[in-house]
Amino acid sequence: MAATTPPAKRRIALGCEGSANKLGIGIIAHDDDGSEAIVLSNVRHTFVSPPGTGFLPKDTAQHHRAFFVRVAKQALADAGVPIVDINCICYTKGPGMGGPLTSVAIAARTLSLLWGKELVGVNHCVGHIEMGRAITGATNPVVLYVSGGNTQVIAYAEQRYRIFGETLDIAVGNCLDRFARTLEISNDPAPGYNIEQLAKKGGRVLLELPYAVKGMDCSFSGILARADDLAAAMKAGELGSDGEPFTPADLCFSLQETIFAMLVEITERAMAHVGSSQVLIVGGVGCNERLQEMMGGMAAERGGSVYATDERFCIDNGIMIAHAGLLAYETGFRTPLEESTCTQRFRTDEVFVKWRK
Image 1 (cartoon, rainbow, N blue to C red):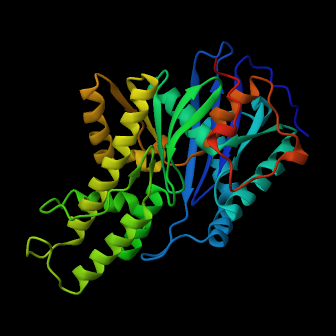
Image 2: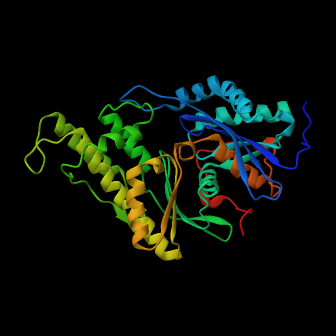
Image 3: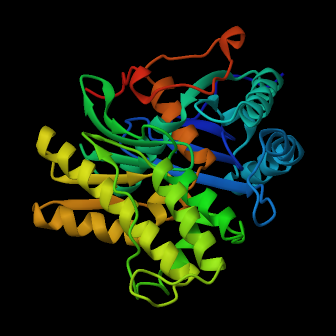
């Protein structure tokens, strides 16, 4: 069994992410004084299902099991660090899909036992937030967390990431992904990305969709149902409200404009409540350029600014789990082997953020 105490002053963590269809393994180093986080490797492999379909938990879990060793070896090779220098193994404890989470948790446990390293279970959302803060330099922003499984508006207070607003039903990314299935758009590289590219070709008409903001919360299921109805009408040759035909591009444009306007509204309300001038967008949908543009316009009107990352860090990845896990590890947090479970439900505000004041 390898030695468990590395001689180097810097601390190094290996992070394993697999809560949905992305399998990611990353290795990060923190300086001894905690002043800098250095990305050593960030490898990812995606399970892509056929057009018109989603990814099932059992198929996604099988993908993660099949590719874990290959991705881990590549991450170690890219990082160029010996196993002895790694302080801890971090893994996504939740939230996410049960099958994929379990596959990666078992793999992380195996590495822990094989290499004699301590485990750190990480909240997926906290991983997104901390990686976003590290990459962008945002100090104390209102966070918009938008992905296939989560939609939350968050602000930090008293060592918790407090949820100010969230979806009441499906996540915004799930809404986009499911509409991509309706239009039978390719899932490669991602359905949301392909909707974004189609939306750029639309805009001749803004089709009417429900606008469902309820206080600080949003609802997307009704919007999706109406968009599906319009898609069926389009395929049947029906005309739009202006008496002209409309296209898949017009549908994608209208869907994006409506749901992103809702997200901007609740984010602005949270900014006003906490007195923040910063917005940090994290999660896979945070890569969307139109969302960033709309949020940027709102923030500029308030004299603020928007922070976002590119697809290396917005989309689920192992390095964010390594970073958040190492932050917790440095405060003395550990996940005993007998408690190294995973859970589909793990709210952001359940985590005690000991590393922040």
